[in-house]
Figure 1 (cartoon, rainbow, N blue to C red):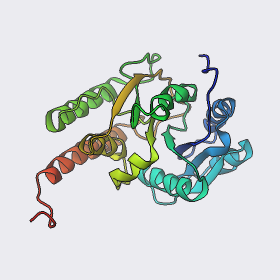
Figure 2: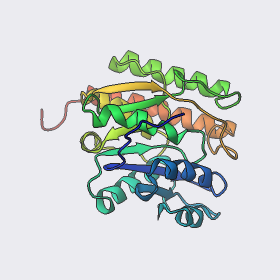
Figure 3: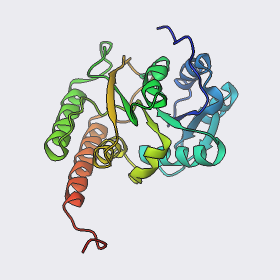
Length: 248
């Protein structure tokens, strides 16, 4: 995969939630180093018991702790760090630490935002090519079900709820993100529709993760994630029809 001839990294920050990813984080960070993004990469250690933070710092990334468990908690902590410590950030990229996402797709994600055409660009695994075993059957089913619910309730057709995405920081601030768990990605996508953000999906490749998934790797983890995502969609739908005190 070739990079654009002029890929400017200024104004781009990368947030990577990580939990016990000591083995997976080095190749992920190596890909980011090849893009020139390592100095503005924030690895949020979400309570790891291994050397995730040590390895991330040794590679040259910023490593910050977030002891409150939850994917959303880690993302919120990373955003807080970006706002305070990486001035001039215009676009924030989110990706997983397990190397299932390919960081070399970041130029394709951020270009439509820096060019002024879009506010949120999502990497769609459904539109791209997934390697064998990268996405399990129950993941595909749950993903399709959630995307169908968003289309039915909010009128926007998504193909994926994957974590790999780029968003204009000013637009993200408008969304007032709050979810601290697995509902983070769907909360962003629903609120982006509600806020009238300019949204695009692009195909991205997807690889089997390094190590075992904390979510899809177990039946209980998959069930909890599915329930959380479903609950988040339903709660946002209900909120959309509940008059606020200001309008009453």
